[in-house]
Length: 436
Image (cartoon, rainbow, N blue to C red):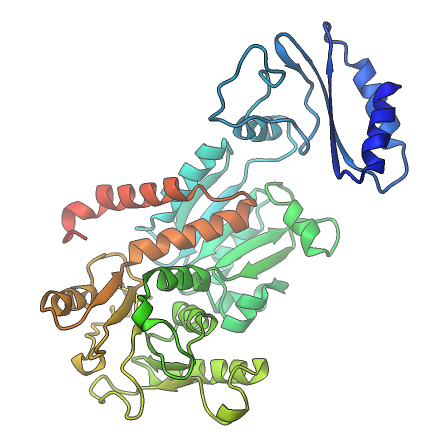
C-alpha cells in the first residue's frame, strides 16, 4: 500500500510523528483501519501516526482515542477548501474524550476548617468550563483527618487543595511526597494515585480517571505561588543578594514554611521568623537550617552560620548587624482556628525602616485589607519609602493556577482564572470591605 511506503520513508527520515490525510468521497472506514493495523504490526520503535480521511465537507474521521486526534485552533477561520474544516478544536476533542468514557468526571475540593470564603472553587470551575471538562469543585469544611480520609477514598475523588489544619498533619498518611513537600515539611495539594504501576509518570497519565484508590501523593505549590509574586514585585534596587538581602516571615505554620522555602529558592540566605509561639518558630528555623546544611547552601566561608533566625518579641529592635528586611511575608490567618481567636498582630515600626522599601506579601485575603496592608499603605502615602504590596487575592490566584495544572495535567487559563478570582471577591466581599 502506498501509504505504508510513505510512512516507512518518514521513519527513515527520522520523523517522530507522521500525519497522513487521504481524500475520499465515501465514509467507509475499513481501508483506514487496515492501514493502521499494518502500521501497528511494524516493530518498535516507530513514529506516532495520525491518519484520517477528508472530503469536500471536511474531515471524515471516527474518534481515534485519547491522543493523536487532529485538532484546530479556536481562533482559526475555517474555509470550505481546507481539509481541516471538520476538525474539532482542542477543547471540543477533550469534551469528546470525556463523553466517550476515556476520561471520567471527578470531584475536586478545598478542605480545611475555614474555607467558606475560598475563591478557589469559582476559579477551578471556570477553568473546567473553559476546557469543557465535566469536573466539579467545592469548598468543604473538615476538622479531622478522618473526614479528609473519607473524602479522598471515594472512587470519584480527583484531588484536593488543603488548608489549615491539615498541611502538616496529613504528611504521615501519604505514600508519596514531592521533593518540595518534603523540603518544606507541609502539603497543600493532595492527589490520588491510580496508575497501574509504581511509576510516577504512569500515575500522572491516570489523572482525570475515576476508580478505587489506596495510594496518595502530596505536593506543595504554595511556595511557587509565593515565589512568583515576590519575583514579579521585587524592584531592581532590591534584587536579591545572598550575602546581604534580609527577609522576614511572620508565622510558623504550613504557609510560613512555604514562604521560607520560596525565599531560599530566590537566593535569600538571611531570613528572620517571628511567631506568637516562640517554640514553634524555633522548630521551623531548625528544620530549614538543617535543610540548608544538607543541601550545602551556605558554602565554606559561611560554615556554621544559619539561614533562619528567630525574633522572639515584637518589641525587640531589629537585630544588629543585619539590613532591614526588603521582603516581608505575613502568614497569619485572619480567622481563628478550633476556637482560638485570630492573632491581633501589628507589624512593629522598627522592622519597617528599609531605606529602599521592599515587598510586603500578605497571604490573608478575608478581609483583603488587613492591618498590615493598611499600615504599609500609610507608610507609602507618607512618602518615606517605596513599598510594593502583594495582597492575598493575587497570591491565591497563583496558587489556584498551580493546583489546577497539577490536578488535571492541563495548562491553566491564567487570564480567565485571575479575572474570575477578582470578580468573585468583588461580588462576595468587596461591598463589605475597604477597596483594594
